Length: 254
Image 1 (cartoon, helix red, strand yellow):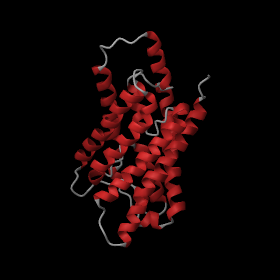
Image 2 (cartoon, one colour):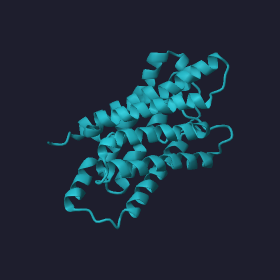
Image 3 (tube, one colour):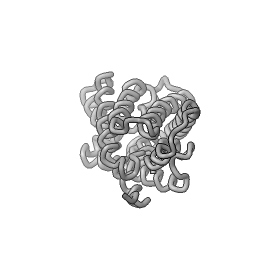
Image 4 (cartoon, helix red, strand yellow):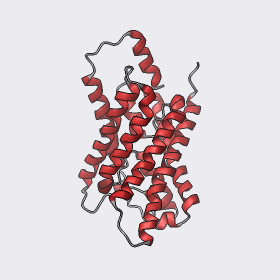
């Protein structure tokens, strides 16, 4: 079966990232509205619900568009795969643009669902550093988050020996778990497109966004994803795979 063309794969990435932001960041925005209305602080239970929402949509997207585009839905994942030769560099810009456009579409979708309260009370689920989280610390945390995600992706979705039928579930639950642990420090993005969409939409609609923090959500995830891809490659480099498996390995990420 012939692989889908680049345009179709980019369309899949755009839709997948849009739904990721709509459901995941949208849940965070809805929680912001509720907590603001009740004059309450976000609890660990709230973060758990947000993490579960992200897990659900990631699982759904992997099983829905994974066979079309690989379901990266995250620029850091795309760059991480390309850094170890598991994705062609010439297609990276197209994927990144599609993902960022999808993030913006998803953010405006939150406005459609939640109205302007989603902007002024929920901040469209935009990620921000906690008052106690320093700039460099934020980059380090985002790098750690992306490292965990990318390391799991390499093991369950890229490695030819992996039971790929479990890939979507494992990756989705990993995303949810990461968010539950780190959301209090950085908002737990580890996805530049997930942060870019709400940042841009919120800014255009009159919300308050600190763009000075945006590099945290780009630099950290990309560093973490690249480090994880190379780390996995290094620890498995002594393993000799049959030629047929090597070919299959390359086809998975195209």
